[in-house]
Length: 460
Image (cartoon, rainbow, N blue to C red; front, top):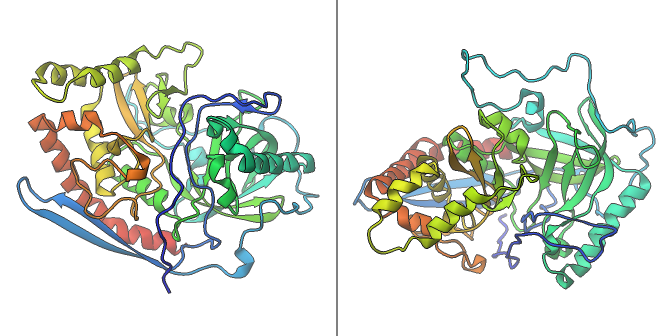
């Protein structure tokens, strides 16, 4: 009944900027590290049993408490729901072609989102109601992509080329090549978006279908669809239950950490079912507008790749933070450092974010010393906050049940260095106690709900 899954042999991640040797056909860009590129063939969670152990200090100085949650995801779709080969010929899209303009087609009565009124000058973090149905967690949504024949062929050629030749290039994972596509969700359409194979092409050979990125302002900088400038469909080939990113981000949000929405989407290409994906909200300017009173600050992918305000390109503050942490010795008196850090970093938010990752636990994220996260330099507070990202390997063989809650630096193959800031924080008794209190609270009040959440997701 249960599938036995060994550890995935494909590890590593890309960062920085790469330059393609095919400049007429490619657009170099910052790396997006998604590592894996397919899902199981079933649109529902396959029948597996995963043990979730979390060792947490119930109280200071007391033995570890092991929390066991048995996740049983049962039920596959019928064979008619199986995805088709990505390189197969597309179905005839006649009659399903969208109007060729650069802006979305909106229906009458489609009004912009208005945040709750909590009085003058009071900002309430919120998710945009205009795209709320797109990320509705109570259903599996349907997304229809439409390509002209030549554009679909170009997409396949890009996918095939980089599948075979990625190892010949440095930073192949940073190359993004867009083709024209249309997007339809319910009665809303966007005529001319940019679609591209997403993730690290070094792993595409093992894929049955691609991860897909969509950029609504690829050709028109003002292009938006349901208030979004981009979308991303993620899939993992080596897990029988494709739910990890979704339940991890749910736990983060429930723990009071700003994190993207995630649900599941059935994706169709020219009428053919491509497969089931995790539909993950992008962290970008629109995301900042929903969650921060002042969204004009610098956003950094991987903690150092600037994603907003690129024309000004002032990265002095993030390097001030990173350089100061690097320069602080692990030994000795840290009183000056402890006094300085809260003037540039939201320490309380960071302690909460680290605790959320440790409760899961994660094997390759911020708490592990990895660069899978975003920094936002919040102008309203003058403090950096951490936004979780790419939490796709939690609750599995890469994050052992007995992972050290103080010094687990992730799976060995990721080769993450110990997170120096975390080691320094532990030397502050007040901060260490706050971290431990966060662990216990998240475990008892949020993690305890996880079996019900997983059962609900897998029943969809």
